[in-house]
Length: 512
Ligand SMILES: Nc1ncnc2c1ncn2[C@@H]1O[C@H](COP(=O)(O)OP(=O)(O)O)[C@@H](O)[C@H]1O
Ligand SMILES: [Mg+2]
Image (cartoon, rainbow, N blue to C red; front, side, top):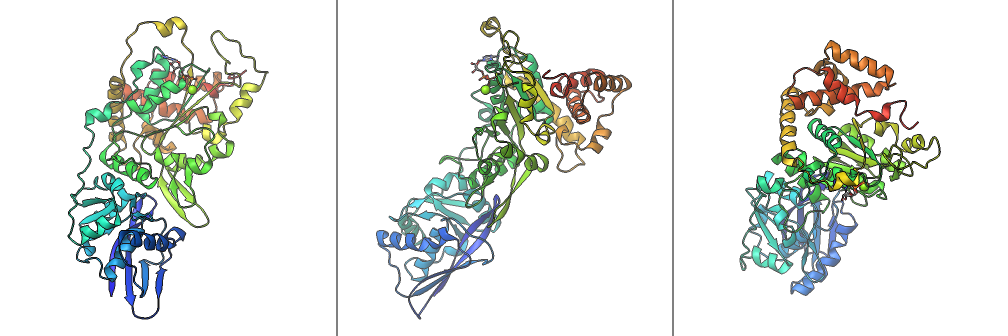
């Protein structure tokens, strides 16, 4: 007897449908798995045999051939256990096959017949829906994730036995309801708020500009000056996730196996803060079977690299491609996949090894030249992609204890959203460009025309402060964002002047 079940393989952050064909025929003995299965899929046989035994199901004595099609697609992981097991059971008439033509199946079997959660269930559910299937049957722990997809019935099961009984009509399993999507209000409620940060008006202003224009930021300041505190609050002033962004980011987290049991669509922008001991693979993606890294988990959100010079040079080097292309290609001997990686970078660092260069009342004890050497640890190409340098100076004890009401994130965010709307209008005709930070040189020339005063100021500043040529474009972009925050069509001298202030590391005098 010949039967077919449906499942899917993950490619990048999407799923491709895989048909599991099972044929039982007269000649010979044993189970044969064909169609490019990797080790985990091949080991499937052992898990299935054990699970059958423990669930009171029979493995036939006849020859069974299982083919995973299309054959040229790499299939990996244990998610094929369930579709293969159900296929064998149907081919041996231990389970009814009526529903199989409209059902996608995915799940790992443990030896005792319970179902274990697998990665990538959300893209599988999206695929099932696109292919017009009626339902998806997954491990109970993955059910909330699949239920996000509308127009598809999600059946969460705990054991193989439950699946068999469900398909045979002997057990009803109520479809999992889509997790209540966080109300817009709840999604906006972060544990942190800019109102927690006393003073630091200049740093807050710079972060507002960064959020408004999509600019990357480097914060430099002594230990304890509040850099980490400020960075953690950046997501609270970014515009809300759109539904499309939420779906894409959630798919990445699904493929990485990072969604919790109750997970619905992510309602907030991700904030990822990998430690400086993080490996290249963890940052960029990779591993035995491909998984998204931190740069992709931060997609549509924030990647925070705290204590930037502590990261390995080679680790920072790999950030180049995603920062340039907003996506990352992970190539290994056995595969090559692409993941989205469009994040806002916020990095922090001490100004020098002892940490107190430029400190208002502590003495820097570093030998001459060490500030430049410390900066030199960060490669030019990375520095080249940072628009704003923010010098964070610690507050005095009196300032820290002063009772002052600070502006809440919600108020800052409103201005950010307005400035983003201006940009959306500006870049309407340019697909793939949403923010000022994404402008190329040609767009810069067209969108950042300076009046005579502004131009004069910029030219004088370039000369007097010894600003590098690369600073020039950065200043224009940031000035454009400052003008947008103000609702100003033109870019004036005041905007350029403020933007120049955020390029302190370009000054010849820095660190001397
Ligand atoms: N402006 C501030 N307002 C309120 N608390 C602050 C401020 N600056 C520093 N702190 C306090 O100091 C602690 C250390 O700040 P942190 O962000 O870790 O500094 P850094 O990362 O620059 O070393 C914070 O957790 C916070 O309690
Ligand atoms: Mg810190």
